[in-house]
Structures are given as C-alpha cells and as structure tokens.
Image (cartoon, rainbow, N blue to C red):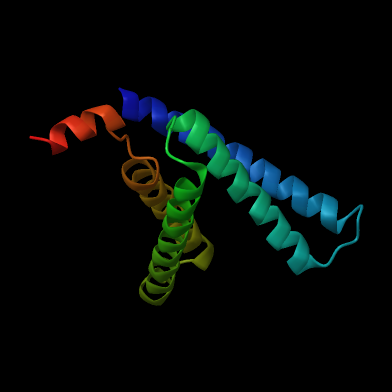
Length: 138
C-alpha cells in the first residue's frame, strides 16, 4: 500500500514539474524575450529542482542528507534519461508508426524506471543509525 501511495504522490509531483517547467519556459520566452535554449534549460532546471525537493520531502520522506540525495538523484535522472533515449531510438528504427507515439512510450518507460530507481536507490529507506551500529557489532 505504501508503494501505491508513493506512486500517486510521484505522479502529482510529475504534474507539478510539468506545469512549472512549462510556465518558466513561457515566462522567459514571451514576457522576458529570452532565447529558446536558455528558456528551455531554465525551465527544465526548475522542474528537476521541484521534483527533487518534493520527492525527497513528500513522496519518499527521505531523511538522508541533501547533498548525497541530490547526487543520487542526478545519477538516476541521467541513467533514466539515457535509457529512455536509447529506447526511443530503437523504437524509431523498428516501428513503422508516427515517431511521436514512440516518444510517448519512451516517456512511460522513463517515468516507471525513474520512480523505481528513486524509490529503491535515491530515497531508499535506510535503517536508523542506532540499529545499524548494533548489527555491525554482532
């Protein structure tokens, strides 16, 4: 049940990331007149930061340090992004369908892989230090 609740929270965070990314990009491009690439990079940074903070604090309630969690989060983001990109390229070569649908399939893969890697690696539940010390003495 806990994993289902976390998956729902993860989905809510994902929606907020998408909204934040889109709003930052729009504000930078339209009212501020910033270049497309700068707007895109800034928007994605805002979305990823939102994702990290909300998933650490709310979705997974991690008590690990911010720095170690951020490093693991960055690694997971990079691995999942590259895996979905590889899948996308593979699907584009193998399936004779509109490439946009391959993008959607790759996105679903990314979301699932990212959730699992964040749950079991980035924000993995750790035994409290007291219990870990007691076990190491055995």
